[in-house]
Image (cartoon, rainbow over all chains, first blue to last red; front, top):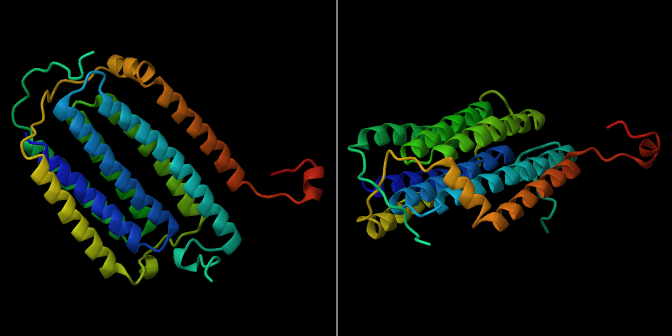
Amino acid sequence: MSIVPILILSSALFSLGVYGMLARRNAVMVLLAIELMLNAVNINLIAFEAAWGTVGAIGQVFTIFLITVAAAEVGIGLAIVILVFRNRATANLDDFTLMKG
Amino acid sequence: MALYRSRGSGVGNMTAVFGLLAGAIVFSGFRVVTSRNVMHSALYLVGALGGTAALFVMLSAEFVAWVLVLVYIGAVIVLFLFGVMITRAPMGREASLDNEKRGFAAATAGLLFLMLSGSSLYAFKDVELQGLGETVSTADLGISLLGRFVLPFEIVSFLLLAALIGGIVLARKDLTPAQEEEGGAV
């Protein structure tokens, strides 16, 4: 089996994530879309690992690092969203206008 | 040290399995970004991640598949559900969940998809998946993680610790000085 269908699948997932990130209004939904994009990158790494098969499975090691960093990102991201929600009583990104001149 | 593993011949035709999985993943991903209900969005993300884990098993990455299930579906999704509930995001159907620039966003995403898939079709059309059906043993992965990649491993664990402390500091309630003197029941 060729690697191309898997790369196209991950491109589709990444593009869906970009769409969600641009179109959504709620901060939690934007974080969900970012998870989709990170997941697309994971698929790419595993696919290239399956295609070339490095000793020590370097692609899989990088996928594990990526999952860890994504978990840290979600933790901090949701903490910021909760903090902003406490101060502004909204999770709507269009209302976060404190730094607008 | 040789860079490439020796590998056996690939297992026959996996195209049908892949087609089913890809359909499920793309449908779930589509529903994540278009669903009118925040809860449904988070639960469709479970579907997309579950499909990805199945794809990882197919691509001989068994350990990573279970890490994905444990960390993402087990922990991250629960965190998201908490986030949805704490920020009192509208639980029911909600018309204003998308902003008015949806057309622009769809055009950007469509163009990006065409560019990415076109360039991967052009650059990797001769690359074949090999060794399907063999699994990379978890022992090999562990040796790699704690041998060659031990420094990044430690750095990433430190990052996780920093994120943990940062999350607590950001999300805790600030106490007034009087409350802190009383012993600060948080």
